[in-house]
Length: 73
Ligand code: FES
Image (cartoon, rainbow, N blue to C red; front, side):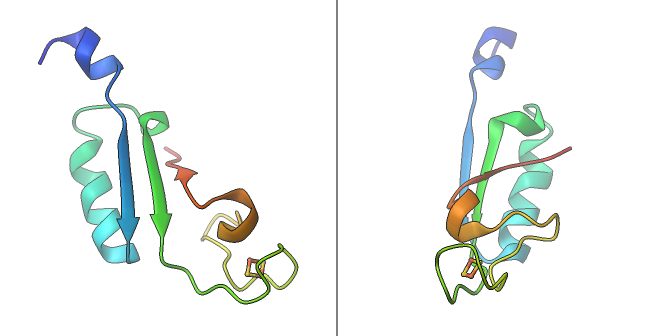
């Protein structure tokens, strides 16, 4: 795969956190974090951004900021 193809590469991961984190670790060997999008199975309750039940570790809410969150460095 040449550099132009690597620059256009995008990964979408869906599933439980341990699986997504394992996939991201491998994917970062091939692309930048901004090319990786994750939809992790966080618990959702209100679905409108009020309760915080679906917060990712960095505070983004899956229900209103997702379902896919771009990987941060
Ligand atoms: S489910 Fe309540 S903030 Fe996302």
